[in-house]
Length: 374
Image (cartoon, rainbow, N blue to C red; front, side, top):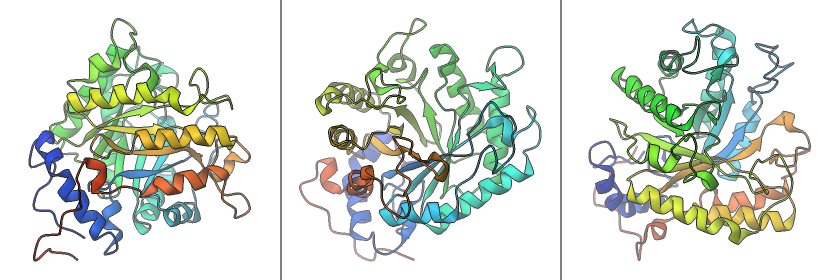
């Protein structure tokens, strides 16, 4: 493990950015020493896939494990690690892991999540636990009726306490909170992160924007505001929160159709959100995006990866989706009969395709003398 003299938590994010060429250069130079450069809190970009299954069959709650829904196997983690992925986003259902609000966590679900953490750790990966609930619990929206911000804080407090390996576990606050008005979600997100930090929970946290958190609609008005307006001043006392966005390639951006817009269509929207993040001292993580296997779509997929290849702004990404139960789903990158899917060739080029050149350094810096490693 490389021990850095400076850490993002010890200085402001602006100062950290000035150090990034030096830090990333060190990681690049010493990437072969240990898989530790892939952990959640280090500076290497986090790039990987969603391993879906545990969120399946939301109409069957809680459902039967390995009949209605499933968890990834050790070989799933290893396959993507071998391809270079150091990030696994694991979607789960709130109602399964916590059968009643503010109740104890379900032992069987927690056991499977712990196994996933162990598999990620064994493969040098960061496991992002994604609460795939759209800002609702059993259909009740946060802030309405019986579900409150305190309930969201409670489930994350319990999970973070049980999964206290901050090197290999990150928290995905809520997937696509479209059920709430955008400004209301922004308040819940800020209050939840603040409350978790007050409880000394120090994991990396991914915070979804409002609605579907689309890059294409970051500046769009909804309920009198926009993600750009609501999240420009988002703060984390530990400076360990990243704003999560999603972006699909099809007309309408739903991810449910197999058409795809041309590569150049995405240039301005990614340029604008990247400039916004830089101006407002925020980082971004693309938690969902996917592509059909056709050649013209793969060109658009590659363009998204090019547009998110600046690790100062883009903390990383997770492709949607992988998981053994997807079958022939048109976006899947799960191997079929041991063979790579067509999309994998594009993704694999970018899993670890980064260097100090990505942050405008003319050449990689030399490591300091007496660099401590273990």
